[in-house]
Length: 313
Image 1 (cartoon, rainbow, N blue to C red):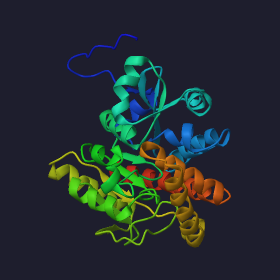
Image 2 (image 1 turned 180 degrees about the vertical axis):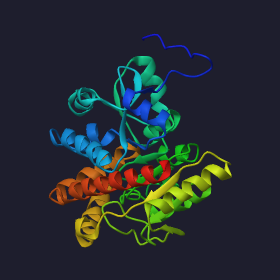
Image 3 (image 1 turned 120 degrees about the horizontal axis):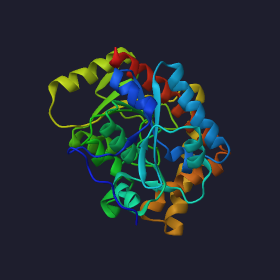
């Protein structure tokens, strides 16, 4: 295993922040973190690289600096150049890293794409306040039996970052996930909606307690959160996929029911459940679920840039 660098002056040397992102943070310019799991594990090549580059460009068009997060050769990185993005998109053996995997990956000199939990952790340590992703992990169906809950939720109760997302993945137990976020003290804002989004769908049918109508209002909540202090918890900004770009609700419900039945029939359990269900949705909706996912991520990147600009000003 490679030698782990020592800390200097009590400050860790990780994550390694790109020159562009570091300069923006020092100058108080807006920065938006982007996760890399969608690049390495969420989309087929070569589209994955095209989408990664598009998301960074959408953030730039919105007036912010993009900071895609990943681990390369054991080094957690915040802000990737074109060659590094291409590595994440095309290199064999890129692992999927949650925040609990970061230390083993560093010690082993491994390369991996960061999930929501790992991205939020590294971005917050770098001083980034806004993070755009697709959908959160959450409480799994039949939680009472399986005790299966995404690490995203617990981590978001311990980091001060705004997560712009399209809700939680619809294959999960959405009401239980919202209850868990409440228990953990993680705030949830609906962006121009009174209903929590359903990832592929504009609405999960579950209400939210607070609604923001503009990026400036969200930035105001972030400033109030900073001023109040207290636990270092995240703020979920739930931004629905546009109705015209959502997955047809009837198709979604039918295929999801079939996917859940197939999952039970084949004995799929644990961490394999969500990838199994999402893959089933992609294959049995003719790729429509994938298109809804990409549409959601695009919208979240745009909104995150607006929020970051409003917060920086």
